[in-house]
Amino acid sequence: MALYTHHLPRWKKEEVEEIKRGIEEHTLVGVVDMYGIPASQIQQIRRNLRGTATVKMARNTLIEHALNELGGSVATLNNHADGQSALIFTDENPFKLFKLLEKTKTKMAAKPGETAPEDIVVPKGPTTFKPGPIVGELQQVGIPAAIEGGKVKIRETKTVVKKGEVINKKVAEALVKLSIKPMDVGLILLAAHYKNTVFTPDLLAIDEEGYLNNIMLAARQAFNLSVNAAIPTPLTIEAIIGKAVREARSVGVEAPIYEKDIADLIIGRAQREMLVVALAAQGHGFELDEATLKAAAAATAAAPAAAPAASEAKPEEEEKEEEKKEEGEESGMAGLGALFG
Image (cartoon, rainbow, N blue to C red; front, side, top):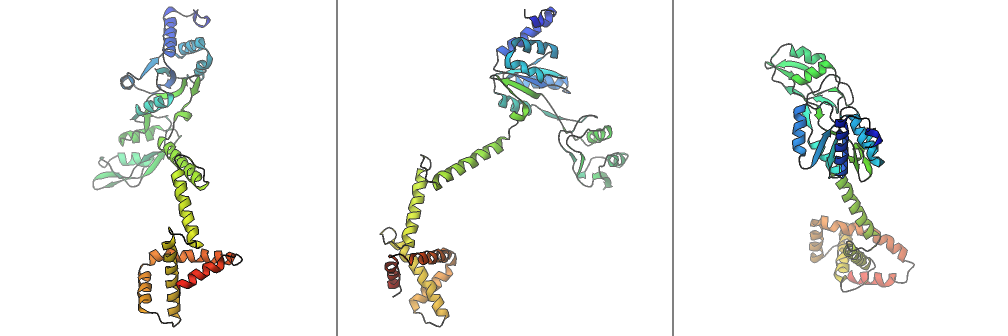
């Protein structure tokens, strides 16, 4: 027998050995806080965990003996075993265990002296109480109660205890009468030893929806980076080629470079620009033939579709300013001039 338990009575030595076997036979051992859990609920929790995890209740001193005899990283669980602690054995990972224990919690009435886990809020609305002393009792703890229609009514939503504050006796009694149960009661995982690492609740309490949203955001950003930086991957090569094709078409239309695949786009743009010029000319007294008037009217009616053409005009003008020094400008202008007759 190890030095730690040589002086213990036989039944305590057997208890220590049982704890050690539980730790050695499972991939995870955790320390849970059982403070304030009624015996009936403990039995219900055991039933809910059956087949997944086993709760071992033992004195803290015996838990300490067992952990110290095993030594290594598991012995650090002694730093978390305090108060009404127990051990839990399972082959699940600590994240699944934490989530499972959270699901076993139930709501219970607050007791005087307990600390509010969250803001305790009394919602406005009618109650089942008839007029009587209850009105004064509620008002004494800051709950705006009044009598309406022969019933006691809470006139407005009120936060009676803020998170972290101690619940006094009068508030606790008022909450019981209003059937408000703010306390989460169940096994609280204080620490879990898994694969030579100790996990604490701050590491295990993961917002799964928020975590998934972050992964999705990162995936979108990585995809966009790959496409915009032209870094080909199996997932982005199609989008990169598609982007390159669209940009090549835009360059071809802006230049203009007469290729069979974009000739229709160049002519369509020139047509839209011609109609803009025609309408401007009409505004200065120039007469337009019937075909041009019909085309201009159609373009005006389809203003949302024509708007992109107008937005393209400015970049083209700026580009032409830069192209004045280039030799290819004359041929481009000559092509447009031919379209305008």
